[in-house]
Image 1: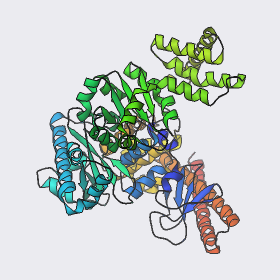
Image 2: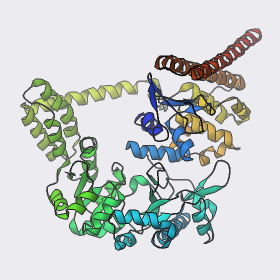
Image 3: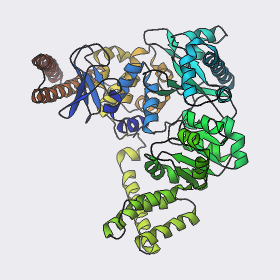
Image 4: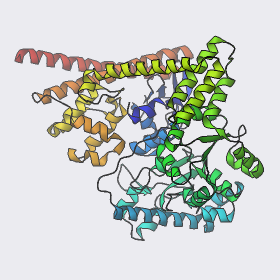
Length: 596
């Protein structure tokens, strides 16, 4: 499964769409006023089972969760992917961008530093920054903290920062490359951050790599970051690491929280070894940075998510760090910022009482079970044995194996036999997978692959002379997000060889797969036309089913006569288009029989 598919599967499209419009349930689906145009009657429908949406009103289009974010936020596919990945806790692997070099990157660092100075000046001195100053005052941040962390304010302007930096010699292309400015689809560009409290993000060397930004109004998302750039990789960033570096070394311990304000408040109260993961799950890259400073790491976890985080990530953290990781559980409903301001002593007590993250996982699982019953003993083994098995340190693995054996009242040898059995099953599974034709040839076959879409794209990519046929396709014909983004980029790019330069690097692997896919060399135009017809038919059939489901649920739940009539008319239109497809297919079949 690609990271794009993983993010999509772990994201609830209903939850995302609800940020932009009010949804009501209608049968298995949801409806609301379309967030992309003005209307009085709901024409915007969400299909949770397909994780898709469609507007039956003025938009007359649809898509998936990525297209919702892209259309509403005015962002690129890559930016939407990274925003949703952050929310879903999915790490996006980064790839070096072609042509990147030290001199160019140094210019990008300098542009970020200049922007940080500009934002900071506006926060401290400008009348427009008053609301942001009030916010940081309410959060209890001191003047020194504001200065030390160089907090700033981005004005509610489309081009104030752009003009400021271009007057200082930075080109528009450099500002786009560093993520401070966004290129608009209609041409031109505008500032990325507007009317937000700005948090400069720096690497361990103190270079400004990007920004975190908090909305000061009802804008969504509430928090956003710079996009991935040659100098900003969120998966390797730790907020406050430049300020906390020496304290971590001296105290031989790093404390990891989630938020920017949590970090600043901690430093303001003397806890200078605190850094933030910026609301995401810690990555191997971030752990690798910490290894250079200390082997002792403590996570401050929210009580609501601590169990899941500890269970899913604990062993991975420890294996990467090569040392034991500890965890503190915050009081219910409170974050580190509140705990520290209420009582620095209590915060220190929590740190002193931190427990190893695997011990915490054991305690949490056991607290939910009755180990006097055989069923719950079996459940405990099912949940805890895989975690124990993953521990690389043999002594610590033996310790937790012994602990689990004692908890469920069986011998360690019994558990070791289960481990050996599981390993044998995994080996057999890998052997079976190796015998599959696709795996044997080394071909890439994603879990959510769509052969028809991929065949169509591969034909156009490998035979650019067929590009004119792309006008017969709609982006909505491509259900796979990667395929749709490649199609959109291909159609907008004059030279097919430039597609990779224009597309987000998260899709490079899939693009390479399509560019090298084995294809026939004869009758390629005929094959592409057939493929386009099949994609159109599939799309129309899907739309017909969606409208049928909506009509049924609307009739049951009391949809107005006007709404039902409108949907019925649209259903008739889809049927007409389907008949046209059938006629074209029939004519093609007759032609092939005559020529054959």
